[in-house]
Picture 1 (tube, one colour):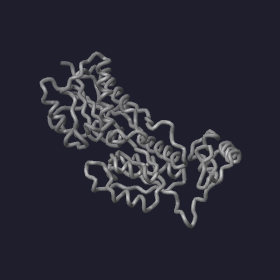
Picture 2: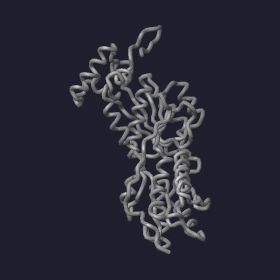
Picture 3: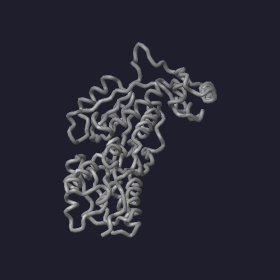
Picture 4: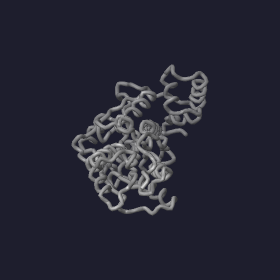
Length: 348
């Protein structure tokens, strides 16, 4: 694959093509091109031979007319442990690829998760090579702005379903919902509630769908009154859990689609002098630090946030080099992390 520059001038193969030819990742090929020493001799040999065989011409990283290659990471917040895990994954992958990262979060977005137009203007001014959006929700004009300026971008765990053609990375949310619910069923629970976040969030909808599927497969009738939504607020989660406890047949277990919301569930149970897991079992989603710090430690579904972020940057690198991925959606697997918040239901 040879790109053609202006006036029909051949621009040579992309680094992604070289990496594929050598059977390595793009960051590894970049290390060889940039003279990094932390590459195995055999790997360096394969990459060097691929460079020579394909006629790859290294573009200067710095020159008088173009600044270093920058990528932007736009987070919904800089204060959450969720964002910290994403930032860690991007930073490590960017370091390996020799990129500089500009991190930003717009405090004026409120609960919409939508960057303001002013941020897009600043992006254009600094000449970013690509953008990673984490838990963001863009408007159609903002998508159009990015397409019009040919700015490559990747969504990490987008709130809403992206338009066709938009590249995104997420977790296997449906399977995670199945795994959490099957764990509670295996313990003997049948009165299992689910507490999700925003109604319109695609990740939460998939987790609830997995919950329903697992119940149906086990022959347990899903109860509509056991399905609640609490947005992003632990306080709202506490209120929704109070409502569940007030039902004529309150649940003996609850699958909470966010570790943060699970903290609100813990608070509601403590207010009623109910113990976890003796009275009610709780399973979260995310495996954030809060899951390990809570008392008792929270059984949860691990969402590989750092790996998702690194994967997203890898896809963005390919797009920046003119090699778009074959699939627009990449999902990483989840797994159950068993701790102390689940147990069989109390007899009677």
